[in-house]
Structures are given as structure tokens and as C-alpha cells.
Image (cartoon, rainbow, N blue to C red):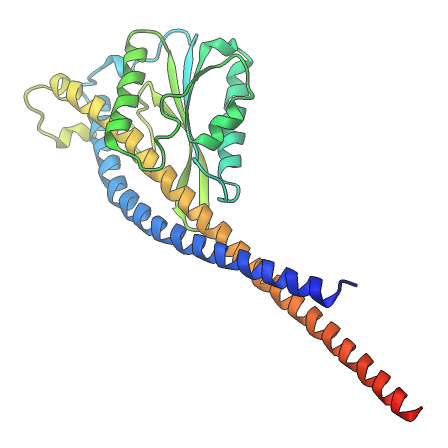
Length: 291
């Protein structure tokens, strides 16, 4: 059995850890509130913009654009994976890593490793991806996930669109965690390019009949599609950030609860030991007086 001094030392150590986890939980909760407001404000706009774009592409006029046309052969792809720059967020980073690795393994069965461009956002994921050899690992955006900016999303989206239109890549996929609630973050895998005409319940149909398009659908789409794709990247970055803060809030709350439980056990153990020591001393005193 541990001595009273050792138990008291452990109590002090756990109390110090408890203060840290409680503070981190409060910070993560505050950041989550801000990130949640940002993504909840952005999602309706992004979905409506995408709905308008899909409606114009799939209406009776059936306007076509190179960004919607699949390439004949998928000889080179790009994968954009979004995770965290820091740890202590539960299984958030490991979930993104697992899904990214599964995606790379799937394409690796038919494509050589150097035919896959891997864009990583998040230092923790970047460290894990460094162990994989042969991929074209692009590090330009590794540290850009903590404070998502539209300019960063626009730069990345424009780079992907340029590579797709030039024929350098034939497909772009996104891997990230979707924020559903504080307790639930859903692993997501989406095709970014070519533009999909059926996403989140938006299906092909004559919905474009409800819009009056001027000057022409082609001219509008030439402006709308790049903007919508830039907005898509920005929305996903905000979504991933909200999921990260939610995962960290839950992880720190769990750590705090565990620390409180451990403290209760240690205090009970300490009190029992102290009581046993006092009882032993009393017995020694009583035995000595009787002699």
C-alpha cells in the first residue's frame, strides 16, 4: 500500500492536472461557440449557392462547363485532407488519418503513388503523412487551418481548378470531419472536382426554370462556379474547425470528469490510511499505559 506522503503527492498532482483540463475545456468551449456561429451562418449560404449552380447545370437548357465534365481517364488525382495543428482533441486527428489512409490505399491499388497529389491542412496529420513515401506531398497549407481565411480557401480552390482544367489532375477529393453536434463529428469524403450534380439531396431536375438568368446561363456560370467552389473549400475549413473544437471540448470534459473521480478515490484512500495510522498510534499509547 502506498504511504500517506505518496498519496498526498498524487492528490496534488491530479489537482494540478484538473486545473489544466478545466481551463482547456473552457477555452475550447469558447472557441467552439465562435466556430459554431461561423459555420451555421455559412452553411445555408453555401448550400443555396450550390443549389442554384446545380439547378442551372441540370435544367432544361443543360448548360455545360469543363469543371463538370469528368475526364476520360483518372490518371492523376488530388486529395485534400483537413485535420488539426494540435492534439488533445480525442479521436479527431486519428479519424481523419484513418479515412485519408483508406482513400490513398484505394487509389493506390490502381495508380502509382507519385500520381497522387496530397494537400494536407493540419500539422498533426502532416506528421503522420510524412511516414508515407512516394506521394506528392504538398505542404503549402499545413498551418492554415487554425484561423480559416477565405483568401486561403480561394488560393487552394483556384490551384485545384487550374490543375483540373489544364489536365494535370483528373479528380479532386476532400477528407474532413463534419460538425453535427458537440458530441458528434462525422467523417466525410466528398468529390470536389468534377462538380457533382447530386450532393446533399440536391438532385438533377428542371429547377432552373424558376430563375431568370441574364445575360446568359453560360456567362453567369463562368463566374458562379469558381466562386461556389472557393466557398465550398472555405465552408469545409470552417466545418472542420468547429468539429475540432467540439472534439477537444468533449475530450477535456471527459478528462476533467476522470480527474474528479480519481481525486475522490485518492482522498478516500488517504483518509483510510490516515485513520489507520491514528488508530495504530492510539493502540500503541493505550498498550503502553497498561504496561
